[in-house]
Length: 406
Figure 1 (cartoon, one colour):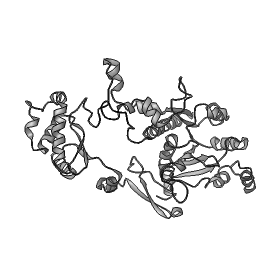
Figure 2 (cartoon, one colour):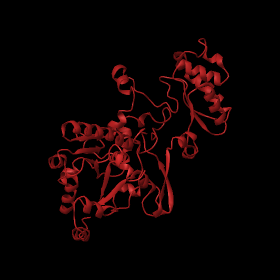
Figure 3 (tube, one colour):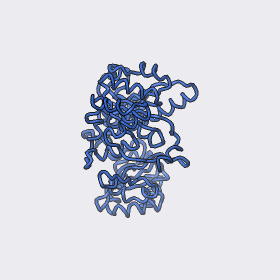
Figure 4 (tube, helix red, strand yellow):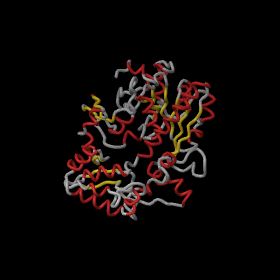
């Protein structure tokens, strides 16, 4: 999609300032930018966002993570520790709709850029504030990272083998992405409220809260019955059986989920052992849960006697919910991924390579999101933004460069 085409996207005309670092709040800004918002990435002139150095480096100096996750943004360098930098930042905020930040609680206030100051400057401003523990509470001044959020939010305790060491639940940055998503939802709702009232507000997003919100009945089960869920390994058997990961003969893995009696009957058919689904054996979910070890062993033995492809073919033929445990090579070769265009190839002349990145989601039927360019070079758009948005002349901009304000 061309820059001209981006003007028809749903968030065209919305200006976002991303003054945050790494993933959580910046991810919200990225999502907004994919659907048409004009995103100004404000970075310190020396080094910029630490995400530029997170991951696999390219010959340009920035990493592949940066190229992918800072897509569609314009890099503007401003030293917010300098009075001149603060003044420039306030001018940008005065003409913007959304500000995304994830500094430690109280940092912007110490710089004279807290919510009260910015809201007075721009009453229509929506401000996303991402921290480890939120803006309030006894832990509000503690630093927070996704790994810490996984621990405090309860999901890390559940990841791993029974009685084994708790492990990282998927990616170490999962909580950052989750909070970026919740932050984006909050910003969109705040924009809708502003459409009706003309008033802005701030969105207070805590990393641990995003993680905790995705723990199904963990809270009510403990509150009502005192149940403390423990680690179950690949097979979560509190509600369904079989429901887990099983190795195949060729060294692969499959996921199988039989949440109902009907689905287990389909699996029994796939295994060519329909008698297992009779009411006298394992046809009832309650019985399967009581004999979960035996049921899982039967399924494990069956999967282990076949290749991954054979297991999946038989499951698909009977309508049994099953799938391969894909690594990234599997994902690149997956027909569904290609049919849905989940991978997008972007030419990046400065590094002499085509960079393949995840496509935008969700898919809108009339105004789908777009990737107009990958993560920018540090300060690539500083002069353009100061000149075109703030009306500064070349002499003023040159003086700010000389003073290292920008």
